[in-house]
Image 1 (cartoon, helix red, strand yellow):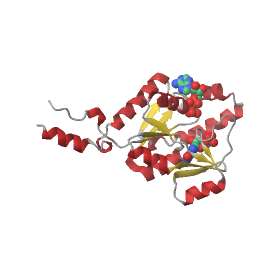
Image 2: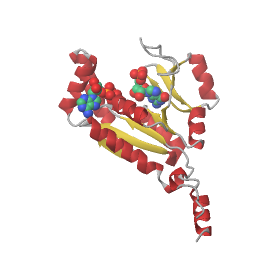
Image 3: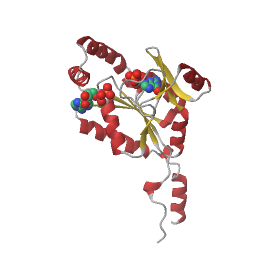
Image 4: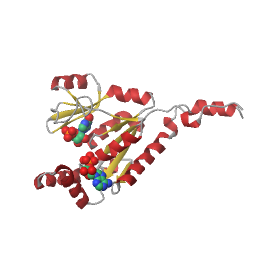
Length: 216
Ligand code: ADP
Ligand code: 5GP
């Protein structure tokens, strides 16, 4: 019997996975888990004009660049999206994303709802949007306090900003309530597995079906 290409190896186009959440809901924790468990998805590293924080690594956490370099990238059309947050500019370099898509690799984004809207306009159906919610307001407050040991007023400010961010949940394709970490991780993995199987991403299907039917 002649073997055709395995259905699991059918070439596909990559996808762009955005995870947004109010600060403290668990987006960073869930992203790290996904990156550690799945070799076919990589983090998009943004450019920013803000100064590095202690411990941040250039090229890993961000590409730290000057205002002039940022303006040049933006004016040349090298950024897929960009935003100004508290006087600093942030943007997503275009080239690594388009290269990954064509090679059938997936890209994970940690950007806010404004960036998600722009990315949706630029990339259309390549984008998969997940919004992460905390199970309760009290749990969000406890996670914020537990993580950063912030002052009560800083936690209160983040809680107030959380309501604004959460108001954008209907703009996302999926909403995950991050109560139990293992359950939320499994749900994200399930979304990614199903989205990878979408017909329109599986560019090799035409050839696979042609070879399949030739053997009938
Ligand atoms: P974000 O990136 O959304 O700001 P983090 O991933 O930093 O949030 O999570 C905030 C805090 O909550 C961290 O201390 C993290 O360990 C904790 N955390 C995240 N998910 C859960 C969960 N499901 N249950 C309990 N604690 C969690
Ligand atoms: P921070 O300075 O704390 O690292 O990030 C501030 C905010 O900027 C966060 O809400 C983060 O999600 C957002 N951000 C980081 N990179 C980008 C980007 O490339 N584009 C957009 N639109 N937002 C970003």
